[in-house]
Length: 95
Length: 95
DNA sequence: TGTATATATTGCAATTATGCCATATATACA
DNA sequence: TGTATATATGGCATAATTGCAATATATACA
Image 1 (cartoon, rainbow over the protein chains, first blue to last red):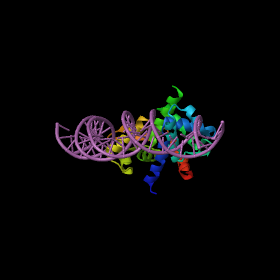
Image 2: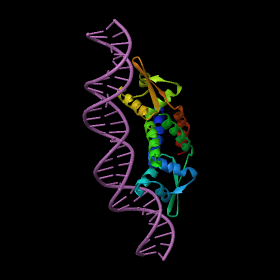
Image 3: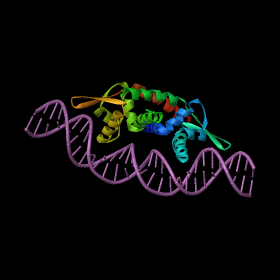
Image 4: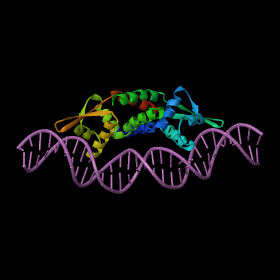
């Protein structure tokens, strides 16, 4: 894989994170897994819309799902994505 | 500013980074400022396209510009954005 | 088996992002 | 002043993202 392809892959991950609803989900998962219904209470969006956001995060490899009974539980695959938010806040403060 | 607004602002920054050309620029600036002509040699895009990518990064507060003579030099405002690489690479490996 | 509940998917319209071309602006220098 | 060089901007076509409504699927439980 050449250099440009590598940057494209990284951009994909960032793009998957680059939405307020998806950031709310990532933030909510920092203390452990949550089912869709719990996440639904946190975000202000249609159930189908949240479901699509979750699939974006899942396809990017940021979260994983685990179906148990009627519920699907999501959790962060790499909690380091949360560290990144600190830097983003610094950017916001400095601009 | 309420919580959702804060997440929207963070998403803006991430979205500004979420493009391969803009990641190449950010990476190129890790060792210090560079003029547009130097960046133009690194990316595979029209000059006007690069210019527009630079304005996206600038508007997001990720880079600043400094015009000296005929050249415009860009540099990272918060080099911590480079830390994304380690975490993003971890996400890519784990998925 | 039938029904309720949780979650995912499809269709579609509206918005936003992207890229290139042409053109504008601003500086340097003859 | 005129010309070349560096960078930015406007216009426009194409593609991608977003959100909701409707529908599908899958599990639980009566």
